[in-house]
Every structure is written in C-alpha cells, then in structure tokens.
Length: 118
Image 1 (cartoon, rainbow, N blue to C red):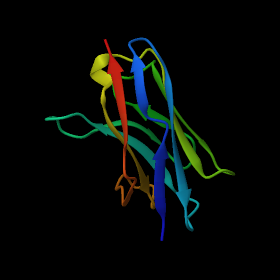
Image 2 (cartoon, rainbow, N blue to C red):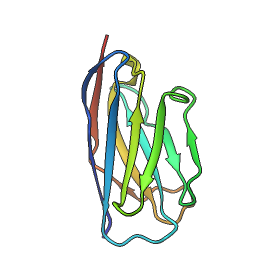
Image 3 (cartoon, rainbow, N blue to C red):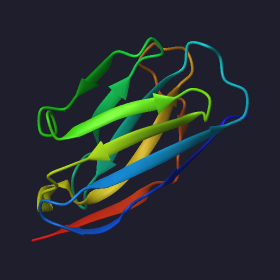
C-alpha cells in the first residue's frame, strides 16, 4: 500500500521561503504523477502544482513563478519549493499521488501547515 508523508511546513515571514517534501513509500507504478494541494480555513482545496510521470509541470496562477515542484525518483520524494511567500499562501498543504497518471488522485498525505506572517 502506498503512503505519502509530508514535511517541511512551518512559520515564515512574508517574502521568505520553505521547501516541502513528500516521501512515497510502498510500490508505485512507473506512471505515477504527484500533486501539491492546499486548503486554507473556510476555503476550498486547490491544486497548487502537479508533476506528471514524464516530468511536465503545471502551476496554479497564484503561485506561478514563485513555487517549483520537482521530484527525485531515487529518493521517491516530491518537493515543493516555495519562494516569495505571501500571507495568502497560509494553508495546510497536502501532497497527493495519481497512480495512473490520469488526473485522479488516489493517495493523500496527512498535510503540513504553512503559515506566512505579515
């Protein structure tokens, strides 16, 4: 069974940076895409970034140019580098796995809190 464990959240000032990590344990297929999502209090969950099994990436407009998603296949880890953080980036961040590279996420991590102070 695949499990995802996030880490790297915390408190940072406006303009600061954080790097989130998501370690995948268990057997995964070669076509395994990953996404980062976030959910702020009282708001709907939104996809922040996605990386396809082939390495292509896509970002939400609100983070384009500030966030970078990447993956290390050997370490089975997906990263979200977040720069120029803003208070509106405050949320619980989740990584999610798409085992068929189809756009349907079937495995989720427990979430990590990111708080950006003004």
